[in-house]
Length: 129
Image (cartoon, rainbow, N blue to C red; front, top):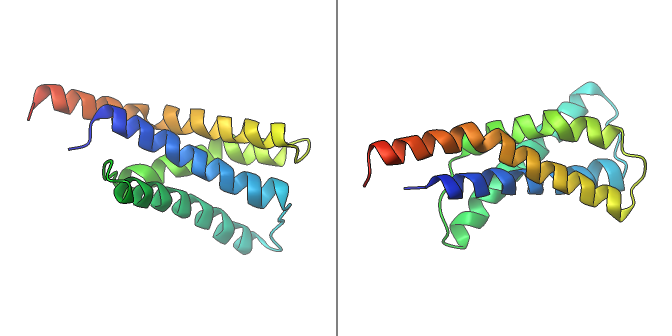
């Protein structure tokens, strides 16, 4: 069973991976989708890839097995707030700007996973195994 600390780590990790993808694709490369449909495909790809990557990395390292039902909503919320606005408003593609985006992803992923981690903690204290 996954505990609340692992849940927090998975959420923050999802935010970091997503922020790295956003930093690379949108800020560093400067990719501008030619249409709204292309933008949705790229954004959805980054969202799902970050959640899937954290799940697979956690499994392959033998740490824990976070659920995609948890990671995908965290990834969506992290992308919407704060990464999308921050990436469009990024002043440049310097290393400090990219590091700031990754830090924002880490913090936002950790923030959006808190209710789920709280639920996991509450469930584990209520039904200890």
